[in-house]
Amino acid sequence: MRSPFKRWQRRALQWLAVNFFGKLILPLLVKSWRIETDFPTDWLTRAQGGERLILAFWHNRQIGFLRLVSVLRPVSVLVSQHGDGEMITRIMERFGVGAVRGSSTRGGTAALRKMIAATRETNMAITPDGPVGPRYEVKDGVVSLAALSGHPVFWVSWSSERVWIFKSWDRFMLPKPFARLRFQASGPITLENSMQAESLAAARIELQARMREQSANLDEAAGLEVDPILRQR
Image 1 (cartoon, rainbow, N blue to C red):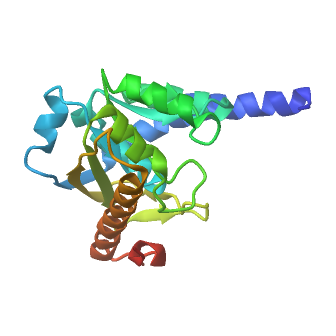
Image 2: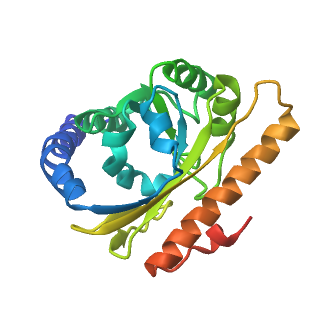
């Protein structure tokens, strides 16, 4: 059981994260980033024209996604139900990103139902290797969501020569102030509810290969050391 001091300390850190970093620092940092885009010609038209899309991006590059929010609205992300999830939800709200609360590791079926329901009103962004990895490994959730909802999957990534890379499980990437981010969106992959398990598994592996190749090429072009996992199929 947490001591009163530990609970107070955790709440203080959450308050600082939301009201100092999330409200003051992060918006300034995100606004400072310059972007270059390589998107399919009809992608933004579809995203802004009422068609609901599923957007897949790696867990370690999720913060760069905030730079695209203004052209992808409405958009929501899956956020865990624990205490940190509430903090993330409040920060995301400041950028106009909705939250679907649920866990892909605990009660994953319930989270999938929530995401399917959400796609009736919003684009759905998902990190298929989150929340705990393995890094750059697509799990079943994104293909299940695509098959059951009928919405197409586009995969999105970015890279930059000016990033901090943390020593976390996902090697989280944080662009430095005024960094130039090169985004690429590819796709779509469209799946059907009638597909057999073997076909869905093949689609998951194919999506994983395409997402890895996309990020490897972006990192290489930015002059970063390419993670060996990205070169695996």
